[in-house]
Length: 228
Image (tube, rainbow, N blue to C red):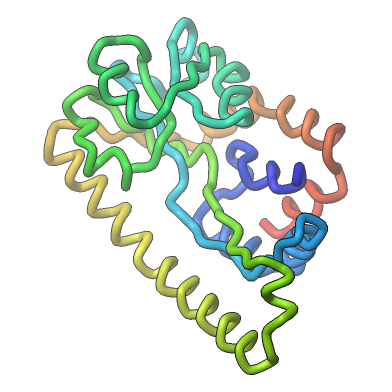
């Protein structure tokens, strides 16, 4: 379903709250309804914290990406690395620690909640809180199964998804803050993008939006942007 690529667009959502606003919107509901064409009933979204940049050397401005090999694990992330001036490298997460340790890659986009428990402080010196890409996983159930349920059971599932969604969101902030504090205490330098730097990133990333609009839907992109 190409429309779901929109969620991966770099820096589309300025905050977790903006992501949640999208997830709760009629725009997202329409996207979930499209899944019925694939025999799935969309019930909502499970979220994760956004992707940040871990690197062996300091990377903040687009110029800092020049010549750097950055691990990317999706097609949109590969285009993101290219647009910023780096060289994308695809590999499984299970190989990333060793690749960073051996210098096969210079950095990686991943979540702080993954990097913290996996001791990325041992193989990277910098964490840039770039929030380059948001993460939302559609929650689905088999459509034929759904149609076979009675109204009481359907309501029970919908209510359970709503409770789980709120619990998921409530726990994310704490998990992210704890992971960042842990990484910082173990020697990782934490960097932030200022407004000018973020604007410079967005300028470089603009062609990715243009491509998405042409390939998938300028209308959808406009609807999501209007929610911000």
